[in-house]
Amino acid sequence: MLVTFSIHDRITKRYYTTAVSAMGFTEHYYLTDDGLLLYYRSYGSGKDVVVCLPGLTRNSKDFHEIATHLSTRYRVLSLDLRGRGLSEWDADWRNYHPATYISDTWRLLDQLEISNFIMIGTSLGGLLAMIMTSQQPERVRAVILNDAGPEADPTGYKRILASFEQPVEVKDWEEAVRQCKQTYEAALPDMPAEFWSEYVRNNHREGAGGQPELDIDPKIGEAIRKGDLSRIAGIQVDPWAAFRAITMPCLVLRGELSDILSAEIVERMAVVKPDLKMAVIPNRGHAPLLYEHESLAAIDTFLHHRHKEF
Image (tube, rainbow, N blue to C red; front, side, top):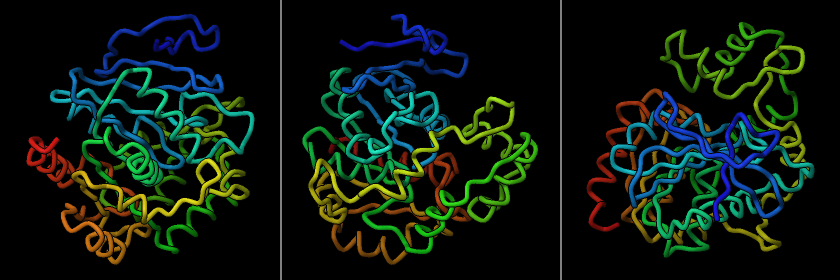
């Protein structure tokens, strides 16, 4: 039986299910195998389900626009991985690992008795989607990879590692917005000024002293530096083998300016999977926001044309 908790009753952990918020979704918590409370949003209703998995330092808020867009046709679940957003932090940094994230996601889907679904994964979420597909392909109807593939361009990968080596501290929200824009403007070059304030609020929280902090457990950085992310349950994982397991319809979105998913990697993906659908999102790096006109058009076309195959 699924256990859900009100966002306001998180500390006392009273059993409670929220009503639909003004933003068009319900908020829930569920218990993992090891007792953590993890958060997810639910949009729409119906038997057709879309599961959204975020990037390494991101959370469920990234999918609000695409989830709202799809909610007239699908039930959309958008997750906060452990240690991010409104999900609880893990006392053991070793659990910040793809194997644990995947186990957590399967637990939610099993508790909700969701037998089949479509997956949307951004960056790390795309890797999780590929591995989950290789584990239980009979449950996955289609996969949408947002600037994610079976390998990462070394340039972007080094950039991400460097961000954990030297985390930036800011004294107030104004400085956080300036710093965020400086960091990500190359990937999102055409966004208006008001976008950056919302972007910061979506993945920052207010620290004990009132200063903005990234809304993730700092120990995630330790897991990146020390952990063996190439093994799942003690077994060496080949991301290309996981990608080859995607026999169902698959769409890959690539940011035109991406330093993570290169055009060469996408070309190799198309060789492995000749029916792969691809869309390049102009003026975007890592990763597209999913509510660009080009992103929405590609996703809608993919889901519409593949509906009978699902």
